[in-house]
Image (cartoon, rainbow, N blue to C red; front, side, top):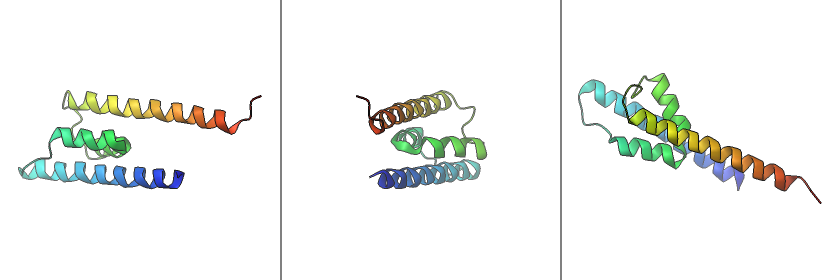
Amino acid sequence: MLSYVLLYLAVINLMTFAVFAADKRAAAAGRRRTPERALLGLAALGGGLGAVSAQRLLRHKTRKQPFAGELNLIVLGQAALLVVLAVIAVRHALVIP
């Protein structure tokens, strides 16, 4: 089960990075852009790391508000979820009488 989750996260993060990169290229060329809701949706579906990586590496949508704030909230929520899941995993792995 864990391998499927990790595979999903790898795919969604790579896909999110690619969509951010395509949007950056479209912006530079003056072409039709990817809606911000779609970009944030991909981040919310687990692509937060890919979104932040693309944002930093490509310098894309770093100053755009409220987009940057919403993306930060999504990533913060995902980090909190990760901590909760790690605590649950550790508690279930330990045998506490």
